Length: 193
Image (cartoon, rainbow, N blue to C red):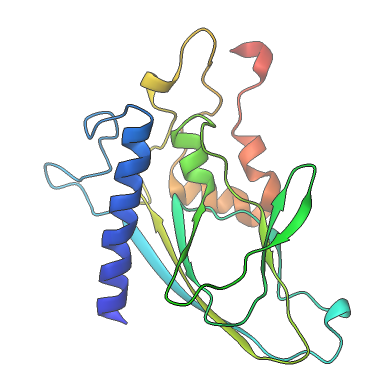
């Protein structure tokens, strides 16, 4: 498990680097991304999920609709379907497992960091009546006490700052209390921008 986490951490850092570069951001723009001068390392959490066979899947939910609090989540689905992502004007769309592949999910902290250019993905997990489903999720985030806020390079007159600074710890506390409304609680009022 330690080696698996190490590999997923490296993958998350590569993907984040590519995402930041696609927005024109450098390492200097996201100071906490590659720790300097003794800064704590970014945080990673591995979660194992088990969804037993359910005789009546229409009366049970594996995991309720939610967004992840992290920057990125890497999800291994195994070979049993159950993950669905919500798309506006479409509804719930299944994300079928692909052998040997991971699903990468943008989290709330990435939405904050990039000032809404990337959106966190609303998703859920369904149970089924034929197969036990197991998945592993790796949540990658910044150090818990580092303030996360939109990069100044991604704001201007046409793109005002959308979110106030927040630590991952503060955000997790807000999420625990307000669930999927947490991101709206740290959003600036559009009229004040």
